[in-house]
Length: 357
Image 1 (cartoon, rainbow, N blue to C red):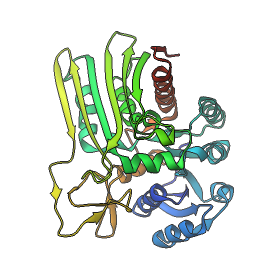
Image 2: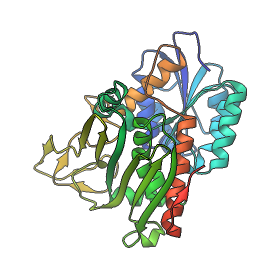
Image 3: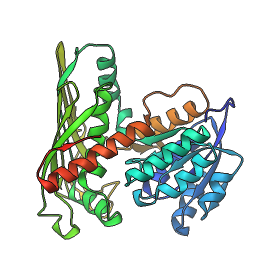
């Protein structure tokens, strides 16, 4: 629900790595006049609350969300635990930004969206890569018709084994498609806005991640209602010491009147330190070479946080206050992404194309 105020309070639910970045983003946004932080683990809670000088720190998400000074809520818990806190926020009619991939159950997604429609709450999902400048510029080129009609699109995203292990270790129900490929699916559906995905066919295999009961990679072919196609690949196989802090991506868009290529491999700024340095997302692993700028959320520089997650958080706050804020992934859009990635997993398991609802 949009506000007519010039400032608002924000409750950040979850004080892990991403919650910390969201809280710091809020601290740097002038329209945020109150910050509540919540986590069930005291050490994480205290560290984040102290670093952003939070107004309140609590183990109870209801206390943070129900606070009358809070007008916007950010859900940054593990994906397994998004539902309850999100429902609390939408029941109260408060704008909410949920970390991708929304939730892990379509029924839960439908419940959230139905309740939000009833109360007037606005639901957004944190597909932060939309806010990388290169991906925003691609959207603008598509919007201006500079490619004509997109008839074929291709994308790939590779993360390190260390990232895959961290994800698989914390969440028993997520997969390379639902956790990682989801970024590409969101971007492709955004670029192909107005088209409906009607079928997905996927292939995958499990060797390295067999002990986690997960696939190592997945490649999917998405067909739209106008016959256009997207080919999207995801891999968790890059070595733990790969120079990219989180991910490398590449996207091709081919249209009837133009084409566009996005190289997001981050090889343009290469650091070779005298001594190994830790990866921000998986600090237990050091790298001898680092692709600077490859951390997907952004980076701390001289004590402040910069990058797409800061931009996305700012857009969410400004939108909540009726001050603009473009590019956000709506709950309805995220529901389509979740449905497609789950169908891709089913296709890979059953070995057949899956029709989409």
